[in-house]
Image (cartoon, rainbow, N blue to C red; front, side):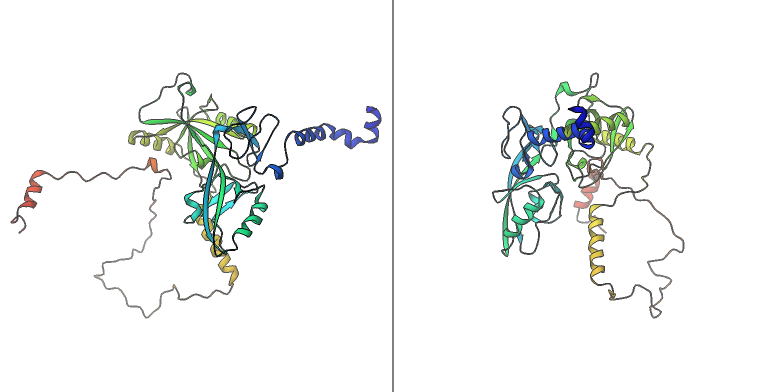
Length: 367
């Protein structure tokens, strides 16, 4: 029978193992439209509002595509107000993960990047198209209110003593915790690291990325899933493999909590620093460029109100003018720091001497 099948149906015989594998997965896992953003597996049955699972403390999140422990997420209910013809100020992936929250909108006070939307006004949602259809019915009023049920991922856990690498001792001036990084489909990771003095440091964290949920610039990664790391290659391999396999990864983080420690971290970040060839633009700059592009496309023959060129009827500056224009140019670099924890505080004014205070209190001191 196998010989006949191999001759009469060569393509089917070649793809037979993969077809069986796909059929097995479809049989074990429910369809996303039937369960919404949560999906049940053979050893885990959960609802969006449950904290524990029957047969194991794991829950399958569709936006991540993997089962994660139940203690790494928490259900939250919130309300967002809006006006007719205007959105609520959030951007979503296809599987209802929040990829951006506009600044100044009403949703900013209750929602954040990485939240997973499960319900809207008691309606279980399956994907972004389903959410849009439900939202269009709600937003017909002049002023509307949307009740959302979301799943918020836990990004920080307290550090246990046995989690520290063997032989490592906590140093004064630093605080330690366990950071959890997730791999949400449709969102960018954008994690940049470097190695210095047998420690792996976070060098750049872009806004509205998965790494910005739990990491900051200057954080030192001591281990990844309880595996000590001292080089960039080791950290990169373990992080990528664990994210693909589990959908999340845990890291022991050492963060500066003292001016002296922050100064050392700044030195580590500046040591052998290489400039990136193509730096990404900030999200607000991208929004401004897109807004101006839409304005130019709407009116290609956009006319200007006033010219920026100098005219000949302007008065010349006098020689005694307080403002002078230098004929030569000079480039002055301005340093900046993305992590507020690493900023150097402005020193306070020193206390005035007693004799100066007494002199100010005397009425005849000023002559």
